[in-house]
Image 1 (cartoon, rainbow, N blue to C red):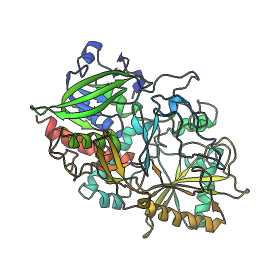
Image 2: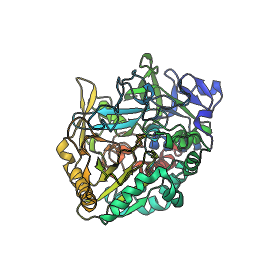
Image 3: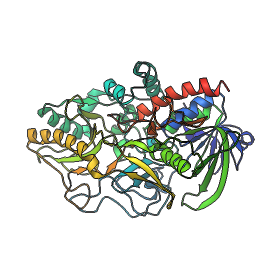
Image 4: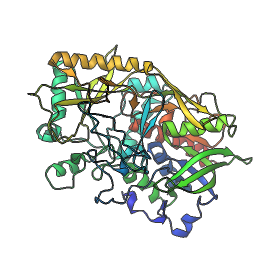
Length: 531
């Protein structure tokens, strides 16, 4: 499967494999295109590929840039220790999840505002990390490709046939995403995963089990990195600001295949601001094109018959909230904006004894998780996260995923024209309590303590004010039907994590991908092919 970077470019912000003249007639400067997909993340990529395979001319709209050209250092992406303007979406300073070390502000850097790859969207009492660029969140996540526990999937999405998902759509998603497994023998011997083995041993002393986690990072490439036979990426502190090598991001899998159909075009640095419907039932998108430094290049309109929202929990929800509250799509359900959650995300860290070093060399790609999800009172799945600082820190870092029943609601402010989130820090207390229950046991069994210096200038051992896994806002079966068709409107669809009601118990991208596979199959058969 070819990488997206090999695609022909028909303009500064247009990506297509179609001939130049053909591609230019589709969706440019106010023209009509049969199908538009907003976003290029997991659900969007699935929709575009399957539409292209069905022969439907499809335009994808992406607000970020295409990450295919190297900077002055010869790399497309910067690493975590030396972030520059490429790291962050239009901020003057980076906003890494670890804000300090020994309470010193040595992690973040001043930068030039630019269309960087990672954004932190800051609401009043919760911040959300999202990827910006062709490939969306696949560019900036740790690649942990986890299928949820079947019983919990059935609890969260009872309207979805679980047997069909686990027999058909999860395997399809994993195959197309190119999920693979670490060699366990190499894991046990390599210095790059000493940090994970230390955390595994300490969890074991508390009676807790761990599990290996599959990934979209090419583990064979990582082994070659360690042997000096391939350029380093995971072993060169690259992940939250992108990986230059080794990682099977969507531009190398679903999106490359979508472009390969010759029916799909991607426009980058284009942001959809508004959606309205015309009398004939088609949809019109108002779009602002910018350059990489944020200067407005043009404002344009594009119309389509079929519109798929794949801009993520935040982006898709905001577009439909704005459409409902401004009267552009007045028949939208009152459920639009409801059912949001951070997938129970809580980050924490522990201080190890001096005789238990975690290693100065650490892979940036997680390989293990502490699995206590079957705990009847406080279920937790905790990623054993790296902290690749380039020196010995004696820190064990974790991203805990908990079963928090609390949900937030997005609302639209007509005065500002922006969406806000009704969510309080108190709503994260069940998640903090669950994480504390697990890590208190580990600390007690190992006579260790929490680190309080990593999450900002205050004494703080649990980071509960940001998340990596935003879910909900356009919940399946509430704001939409059971296949993502938006209630009240024909040929309008949601195909991303906003369909999942706030929690799925593991890293969610495989579930988002598989659910999108299920939904688009039905939509193409019943709505597109039948029209």
